[in-house]
Image (tube, rainbow, N blue to C red; front, side, top):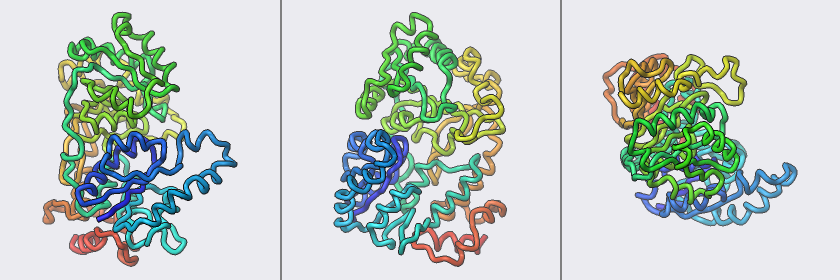
Length: 428
């Protein structure tokens, strides 16, 4: 069996493709088409895969003037496209909704492509991807993207086998300065209070010191954080912002005891390496969609009524989802004691785990108001996929009607889950 995954998105997405790639590796020869800037990291994460780097984004393309980008894409990628077209793949998984993804998919017989298909000059979205577009309109009950990609395959490996259980390595506390989306990140003063509090209540972290992580653009933020920290803590900090490539980043975090981070690619890399994660999720970050994959991770999830939002739209309420993180003393006191009464209002303390569908987050403290509805969605999707579930239990009629439309009955779909889904709707 020779199979190809087309994953042309960014750092975090590459790591979150791990469940699908490891599933395919168990079946035979696995190939991966990705942006060339991520190839060194991919070779560390997926040594079993044959790499096909192309120019898709990042430093290889973004530094060029817009007028030159199209020519660069066509000219530089032509050899890679010819190489891919000459390989006889049994199955192709095209994961991203982008023009370049479709152009790569066009190299292959549409009958072997799953996900986003190019067929006779048309961009076709497979049924499983169409369902995801529909449930994404109900973001508070969403599914982890790693599991969504994995279930393009009819039988992905169990979620507990994707990443190693989280276990500290004695290297102290790692702190990620910021993510790509600014509102997802804690400001330096707020972050410094949380860092100092964690070091005060966790002697094991204090013994290992602090490592600051980020790109060159985060270096000024790191300097501001150091000024906010108590001098005795700042003196032991190792500021690596802007000094590591992606393989170097992996080496820097693999021995940490804990990584404190917003929703970033570095967070996903830590989870893939089995490093314990404490993540702060606010603004557009929603742990049920993109939380750290594996057992033993925690997320402090803001739950104001306006979340999750869109970073591209201005915030009209003063980023009030940041408020629960502002009192670092109260927050670290809660983390030290575990007393539910000490959890700041507007936060959920979530812990990672698994069910038959994939990664789940359950509250250690705080009220998850959408838990029952989210469970209904997971039950429905598990039945759709043949992943278990009690077929005699009632399922929300509203969810069925929102997920399944007339075209699902009328338009044939090559994806393996299609016939199961239609039979389910009739039975329901």
